[in-house]
Amino acid sequence: MTSVLVANLGAPEINRLGVELERRGVLTGYVRQYVNKHRGWEKALERAPGLGGLYSHTLGRRTAPAGLPLHKVVEAGVTQDMLAAAVGKLPLVQPRWRSTVTSTLRFAAERAVARVAGQRAVGADVVVASYGTGRYAFETVHRAGGRAVLSYPIAHNAFQRRLYAEEAALHPEFAAALPRIDLLPCEYAERLDIECALADRILVGSSFVRESFVALGHDARKIAVTPYGVDIERFAPHRRRCDGVFRVLFIGHIGQRKGVGYLLQGYELFRRPDCELHLVGDYVPGHEVYARYRHLYRHTPNLPQSDLPALFQEADVFVLPTLIEGMPLVVLEAMASGVPVITTTHGPGDVLRDGVDGFFVPIRDNEAIAQRLEHLYRDRGLREHMGRNAREQAARYTWDAYARRAADVVLAETTPEALVAPSSPLAPAGQ
Image (cartoon, rainbow, N blue to C red; front, side, top):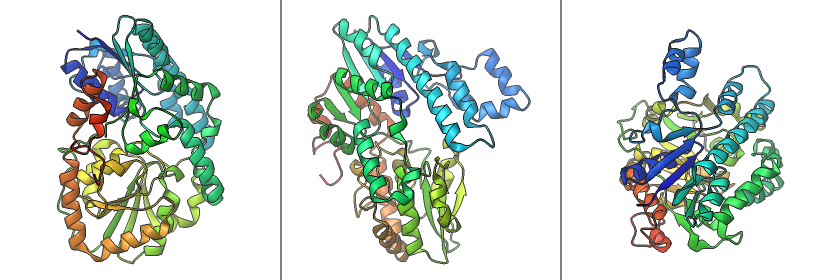
């Protein structure tokens, strides 16, 4: 029987895949960062005055997904992981310094996961790894004639670097809020490149990500597009308030990778007295570039997943004018909640149907955002119709569907071509 080792830094899609591999009886181990196994010391920490609440709302939330046996979960990089979480919560700390320190600690934790996975891969037939954790395990499994499957949740690292440089040149006024990928350790970029070269198959969440690889010379035939999923029980439509307010919602890191500058400009062009823009998420370093727009929106810091359904249920439209993504889960969560979406094709292009569930706008186009907001604002019937369509479309992208298809790729039970065939229920929108 095939044996599969999984290495993951915490990606939800790999958690779901691990459960499916366990269900099929092939999972031998699951290497990851810290996970709350409800051990005695963890229960004591949860009850500790002061620390208990902090732990329960941060690392304490990291529990193994249902269906993944705890004895198969191997932790690595726990110290670095916990320090990163602690630094991230330090008050009155300069944001860029905090970001640099937490990034350094997380890279160290990632290296620890990669090294432990390399040790545990001995005897495995297949290794599945989230990007950054697979190099040593891939080398180990290849020496024994096994296969390596890499999960890459965003556009290729070099493609990102190119796009951010282009963005900074085109709109320097927002450049400070872009990811500083140029500051990442050279060793990190080299590790990602080595993983891509070693992988026999690369799992990606969207056609956009696949094309970012192809643009850099990678063979499209080894890249399998498997869009991620959504919990359609948790995220469901709800009767919205009838208070006459048109609510525009954004959820994500408040930075330029997500196109926040263009959202703010577009909303400013569209703005009406009976409208509200709600930005939910943490600010990125350099967010001061948005200071002149602060009067336009209401802000809520990052919230746990359990709080998100209520936000979607209040919204009339969800907007994510992202520059670069893999497959943003928030788009499917909005759709499952019956909310029309305004977004770009740079990640969500496989799941949203333009003019059916919402609208695509070009990247960097604030006027297009304003026009689409105006359209939905004036036509409540269209909003409701698109919301129903969005819910029906999202129901085709459950986590179970993702896990089955991803496991098929891992176990080589289907061809790469079948994963993106027009007859597939997960084919790119418009086919």
